[in-house]
Length: 372
Image (cartoon, rainbow, N blue to C red; front, side):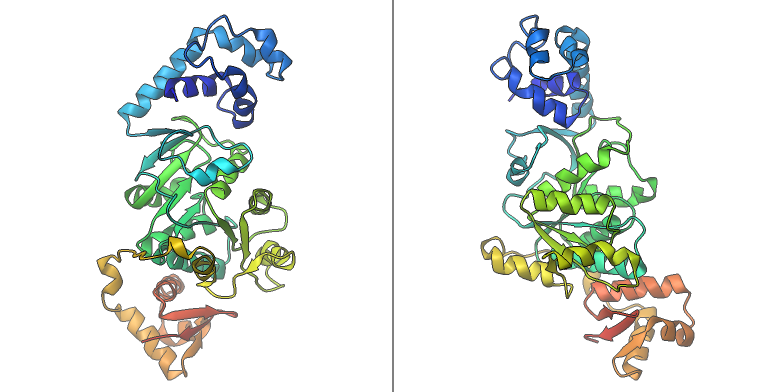
């Protein structure tokens, strides 16, 4: 398919996916003669294409805009992926309003021969929610599952970090363009993902985020994934919309249940009650797909990075020795009181120990020793 044609079609429709889908079928068969007077405005308007868009068909500036976008991408290492590209994920074609074009930076997308799972949730999670998202991301990556999320603050970022720490692949679907880092607090994460994964968007270079882009972005997050894991979120939230999109597109939905006293557990608890697959342990999602799709796990090996086999830090040793002295289980408040660590240091070390499978976090911020 002509990439320039696709960019032109996007440009006359303002890169709005619903309008692109509505207009696209009217141009089939005319891809070699687009932006010509043959495309009558009346024909377009009879088919629901707004007047302001139908008038753009014969305007040369939109063809020039398409050419400029293509040139910019070529010069700045941004790949343009159409639905006919080998890199376009087949799974994504089977959603409502699949994107006709994607912009990508980082490694080539290679999702067709592996399971991919999205991990989503609140931008303001609890410490336990952050830990769970990171551990799930790590476990999925360690088992060869690609981790998909939106690189937002909170659960998204933790899932990406866990996947990177697990030595696996992760894909960040941005609401804005791939060359606009948002939020800026995730700038370091953005570059780490590009080294060990892929950043994609359906928005052209230079596009800043607008609030309504997020729901459009979320359909791609869901579309890239066989299943979606909801870690935390309110009953009415962006995460609830993502869960609904997953159900509408016949994807598996997993829910991490939580305390009735934790308002961030409201959505996953509702989903669990409505029949979502309950995540009762960190490895539940990877185990589910190993059983359901064993052919995608045959001889699957994830290369571990050297830091994963290094010895424990001095802080880790003190934490583990304390838990051993307490019979293999201890609460974080007890550790703070006895060990004298700063709260952020203790929280960070506990998260890493859980990710490495040395500890398991349980309710009440209590930690169980698994191996030492």
